[in-house]
Length: 248
Image (tube, rainbow, N blue to C red; front, side, top):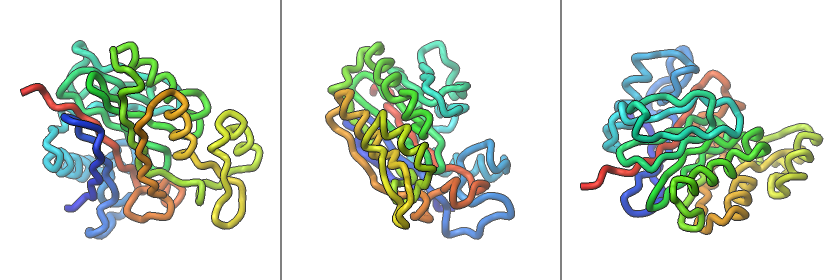
C-alpha cells in the first residue's frame, strides 16, 4: 500500500500531516483504498492495515491516536493526563491538548481539517459549514488559551477541503454564512452560488489573532488524490494528524 502523506511545518517538535486516497491499488467493492475512517465504509482489516501504514510512516503508533465522533458542532474536547491513551472523544469537532505523546486526529472528506500548534498546546479541528457558522474555531482557540497557549504564538495549517470552486449551495445558504463571514462568499467555476470554507476558516483564524496560517489550497472535489463526499459519498475519509513528541 502507498497512502499519500502530506507533511506540514507547524514548528519545532511538532508533526502535522494529511493523508489521501491510495490510488495505486484497485478500489475494493465498497469504498476506496486508503480510507482511515471506521464508520464509512466498514472494512476492519483494511482499515487496520491502512492506519498501521500511516502510523509506521509518521512514527506514531495508532494506540496514541485520539479521533473524534464528529457531529458538525462547536464543541471542543480536551485530552489531558486523565484521558485514556487512544480514546475517541464523542460528539466534538475539535480536540486540544498540552500532553506530549498524544496524536490528535480529524477525519474529513470535503469539510476543512485545521491543525494548530504552539510551544505549549496543539489542536485538530473539523470545520464544516455548520462548525464555521457556530464558532468551532473560536472555541478551540479559547480552550488553547486556557491551556496556556497564546493564540498569537500559534501556527495553523488548513488542509485539503472542497473549495469555493466546487462547493455549490443554495443562494440563501451562501448568504446566511457570508453575512457572518464575508470571505465565505464564492461562485463555482460554472457560475452558481458556493461557499469557500477554507477562505472563511483562514479569515476567522486571522481575525482571532493567529498570525501564521498556511493554506494548502487543495480542492478535494477536483483532486482525486483525496476523498470527497460530494464526488463519492461512500468512498471514505482522509485524516489530518497533529502530534508533539515526548521530551527526550
